[in-house]
Image (cartoon, rainbow, N blue to C red; front, top):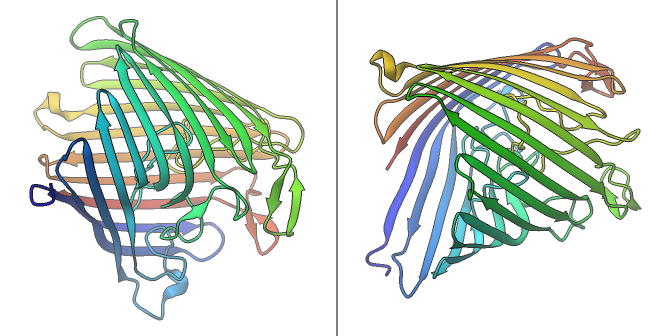
Length: 388
């Protein structure tokens, strides 16, 4: 099994520049990626491991105050860690994977938007032996990556060091033609119990014209035994509590796809909803801003995507998104515009460029030395990927 194993990975170069309305502008250039080995199957068993590396190129030592932590460790230096290390067992439609691994669920996902995806320490079981249905269940203890906190290269618990982890169960069903349903439940120690469900229905009017409709719902019930790392207090309310509603539609007209989405969160006073442990599942989520973290937040998004393959340029696409977010109790109003271009040269090589413009309309969402200030900024990102 080891002799017949396979090495794979991605070599990635990334550049990020963030121009802040307040505080120091930051930037950085890094090269690295993922080097992975997975053994061949032996009686249903496989072993896998992957090293995640980000080698700082710029800015140089001595300019660390300008270095972005988007690509580097908390000390603004290069990092390397074992992002994946797992035992995988498969038999008769049943799969069990234990160890550090990639997970894609609504409230725990890879969200691969910088140098590396989020990865998780978990035991996850999947059963696909029922026609058109997949069952998922497991337990997750820690995760690392861009969404994990201040030091992206360190595995951390989800709700402070006192948290034991997250129990998760889910079901995905495609029994009805063109309709996909999914439902998930998460028990997040020291934070909240969460439910998420959505339905996606696709209608093809012709080979070039189609419509996709999406509805989603989420509910959070707060835990009252949370730990506040800032105060050192135990057995307090986590304040993650409320409901989220969402609807969306995408219309495809030959090479053009137009989209619209709306989310609304409903909370008691002082409560908010969460993205979970990743990018979050909400239909209005932009490159930078989501409805998470604000009381009674509302968001809508308009999008347009142009697939240039039908114009003779295979692998090239352009996307523009406009998002608006508002919370009256938090006195928050944010607008975001995203411009994205991706080009897949071939199966191995691809490039992506994105530019995000965040306008803090009320100039009060950025906590600068204890005071509220203008949280607006422009963020430019370039990534080159070579897969092997």
